[in-house]
Image 1 (cartoon, helix red, strand yellow):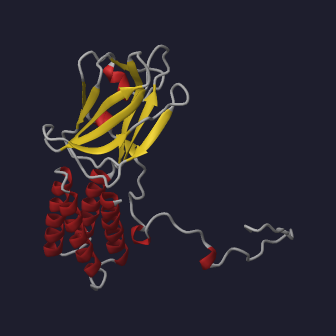
Image 2 (cartoon, rainbow, N blue to C red; image 1 turned 90 degrees about the vertical axis):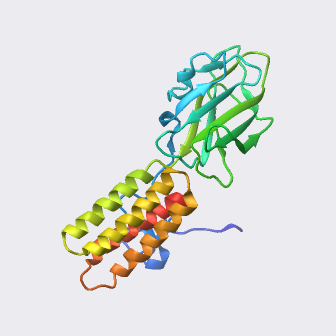
Image 3 (cartoon, rainbow, N blue to C red; image 1 turned 180 degrees about the vertical axis):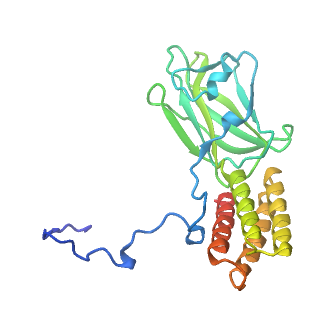
Length: 269
């Protein structure tokens, strides 16, 4: 159709078989290995509200930076202001972040900034940098992707340059990542317990898998994604072997396998 053409449609009282073959189905955006998962796919969530937020001195209405209301704004009085986000229960893997310009008059927008990350809140590494950015209208939200994101307990944005001499103001700042990973571990363990109660999984298999899942979840909470993924891949192999055992329920093992693959995808996507 790139060169142009004509589409002709012959209408009738009965539907035809056009477009009903298996090979005419649209491509699925999710991996086939996760088919049947109880919690996948997951959308990106704003995780900034789960963090303890601190900012440089002279900041007014800091709580409005993450209140999900573009009609409010936080104002920063320093020359190079910053805001720090600390996650205490787990180290999330932030894939994207957004900034929303203030709707207030006589304020300036961020023009150049640096996004930092840290495991301990002391040693920081740059994970993204933007320069000469503009906001075309008030209360405009712009999204930015972090290349090769990893998991950290701390994130910090430092504004290096603003758009004018007026005080810097931001309506919203969001850190976007997956929030369903912990729930995924819980769901997977619950289904494993259910299969054990049905005697589809032996006590030895249940104990072995639980220990693998605990290791994976602990590594995830500590921000060690490679170790978590490695443990989950071991879990996938163990669950996959259950599919070939006569005492295992195909439906139950299939759900366990789909959920295990889903966690791997959430950790590595």
